Length: 414
Image (cartoon, rainbow, N blue to C red; front, side, top):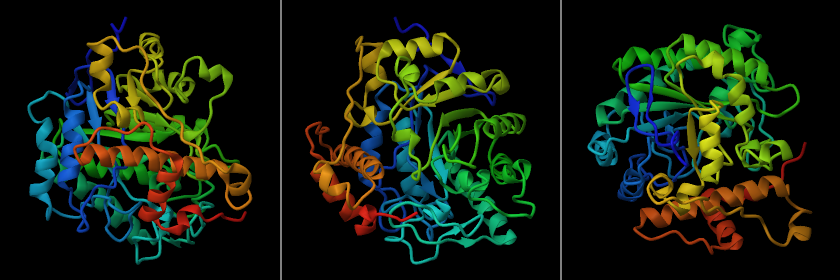
């Protein structure tokens, strides 16, 4: 039975989602060299447009071409790519599925291979991930300028035909860096206590609301915690939820972790495994705080039964699907219309573990390989091909190195 999964859900500012399935953001790395979207990106999203999702969210679109998360990011600083952005969004104009753009700034996680500028962050604290370099602490005026960049990107997205944006506030990117006391050690208006650390994300939300129409959707992907000692906690995350709801957020997607502590790619505790989703217990704990703002949970869902139970119980309102949509782009239609019980999945891990374990952090390497393997599937879809479930970890490693350089495999001390 998928009664609840197939039911509509209303967002506070007027949008109606036809069902409870969301294609969660996946970094496609299919932008052109000039930062505009490519025909391959359009072809990929045409597959998802026909998949019967209630909502589709793009991979992270950067707000500053000087600071990219990975090669192939789309960048919006102004309307120079407006025609191509319109072509990207056009497949969703008549199908009833809203397309939202995820907007992001990597902060200290900027990719050194594609950037010629020193990374920036709330504080000059280096990330303990392969290839990272020490960032420069942002000045007050620079922070305000970045807030404006988010608003500009959202305004251009609306002009291009996107129905909303999602602020990336998870996985160690800039919003998360402001929220966490490990990475934000400022003592000015942007840090020093929990209230000032959450000011940046609230200013971003307010700026987007001020530059877009009333019915334009604004959501956030938010960490439940960053799973590091002395870092962003679930208690602080709940206060962020409370503040976002008060300032007019439309949808909150729950995730967790960072590329230093990749909980979003990790293994589940036994108590969580039965319910499949990594962050469902936390989502349930903020359900009352969110009021009429829907809560989405992404990460771990594979069976239709677990998805239906999560929505039916009220623990979450929307089921986010990420990696499974690389192998089955039409996943919601397969579940709702064809009765598919379990989605395909692949957990890619490095081979030669005794050898590689001596020179690399295997947990971080497995996470990078799994991400690269699924990115390869997106590239196949963008080229008009079908997914290749038999692709090896070695092929994923080769393309990881080609896309991100040798720093992708470099072990970090500390």
